[in-house]
Length: 441
Image (cartoon, rainbow, N blue to C red):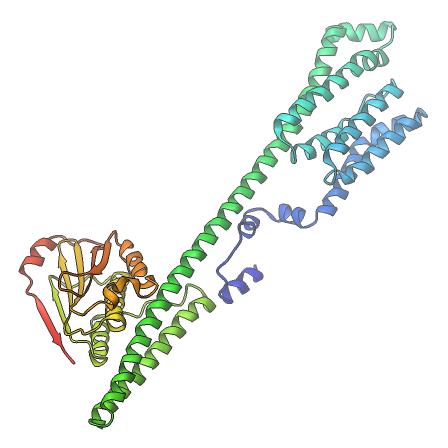
């Protein structure tokens, strides 16, 4: 209990299925799993206790080979986990040999039952049932040929007892049925235990695969966040530093403002990187969301304006839902699109950003009128940003296309489904006035 609490306090989210399974079993089963050698010794002790009457009877009758075989059976049962099939064959042979050497020995199947159970927990049920039928057939043959003649003589008392129980044939059927039935029962119990263990192992394997997929998904999410943070911040900082060097001599005051914005962007980028890296250290408790409210969007657009982009932002329709993940998706798509314009656009004189809500859909359009590098801007860069925007749009059953626009520049069009469509959204989309913000450097 304390160990689990310490793991939770340390912020470790990974808990194996074995640990969860251990919490479901009782204290006795947990102790048996932790102390397998102690369990083996207890099984041997149980065998000797149950076989003690047969050992004492054989010793009093001076049938020492039978006593030796019974004692050897008890000791070899200690190694039944290591060599289950070999121990099973050995126990079956010793039990049969004891009956052959001592006609008065009624047989003690305790060791055979233990060996059958152990082997059934490690081998397929079909194989074990076939082997059990063969062993039972051998036991039945010895019982019929040697056991019953050794138990009853031609005395009137023994013959009267046979007549009372229904005769030798009835006694034979009962004895053979008991041998076969008891052996089959212990094999069935062992097979059920084996199936349960296989089921637990499969669940554990499934849990490991799910955990691996979750880790891969989390790494992709963190990589997408890092790309957005680094690409956006560095692009803005480079543009600001270039702008400051241009206006430094002719307008020192303006250069100071640009340098102040450069410093603020660097601090903001450092805070974002610490936040994302914090997820790697502390797990999912650390939030990846930058709380992209209205003021966050305005600050982002203002930063791009200071960096030199002639922005024109337009939003129409009802306000976006308060869902933080949805707002983060809109925020990142616009941020990445503008970052690409800042990095790859040439001769850009106008950049349009449109966020339009119509019914249960939100459209995001970012277009510029710049020229493409070498005639193909899509050939520049690694396309990780566009792929990341597409993954974000897919979270809300949306689509994203990016490529040359009809205006000669580059265009990004994303369509998202609202997480919780509101009733009457179509009417609101028509009656709500359009808001437009023009920000130019």
